[in-house]
Image (cartoon, rainbow, N blue to C red; front, side, top):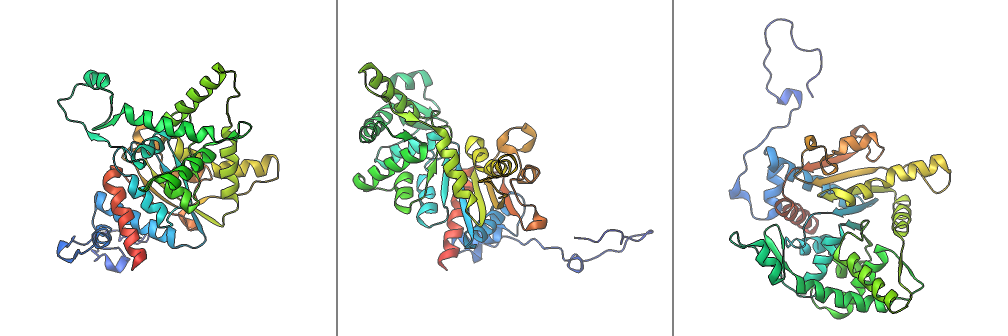
Length: 352
């Protein structure tokens, strides 16, 4: 940082940058790129989006190398339909994250992928009305088959049939049950299968906003018609489970893809612990995220939650400021481009 108050009153004294400890940018030299990590490492010394991707990999690497840091991954958007499911599996399988907070759609479509069903490309000359009648649900430029969702519902129904009707459900509990089914019955990879095998809890705060949530609704409606006891679901079990998980950690970090409910639900744990401590003086504490990586194309000026910065989170007590060691990187990019680069680079660094 150039010292304040050192500029001469008259004229200019030109400096060379190095004397003020400025960091030089460097040309990206593809002749020296042999791995993804080589590329991403060089990107950190370029400009614009390239620099943000490189810096995100640097922060994420530091986050996962910190033995005292518990990493929370939050996911939103159409990531599994967009074929990012195995990238998320890699994050879990390589012990890069300790908990996952997601939209229900990502896990539902990931369930489709995990049982071997296929998504298809949408072509621009296709008609949405005709797609509806053919049983093709469009997600941007990709098609989900209605039959896929019916196949998932049949499996999910069998999972629900195996649960004692006196059990009060939570999203973490249900995701673990589905993961166990996949581990026992499916050979391929899947997010919930990886999470189950690695004992990584998966939370879906807005569970009813998903195919799996609707499947549970159908299950309970059918039970009521047969005069049977429906299953009960309590979202506060997830809230308290996650809060206790975070409360006992020495240091916490967050890797956010997109925004929405998963992002805010993960971040609100810090204010929640704080007001628990202040209002009831038992079971709370002061716990802020020390590291953060965010991949999201939404800018702040739109005013949406997904565009709110980590620096804004400092004012809420969600993030430690840089003056106290807080470190974060924000990538304004399509996650299907940036996420694989960041994850692959970090995995390669860890294996060196």
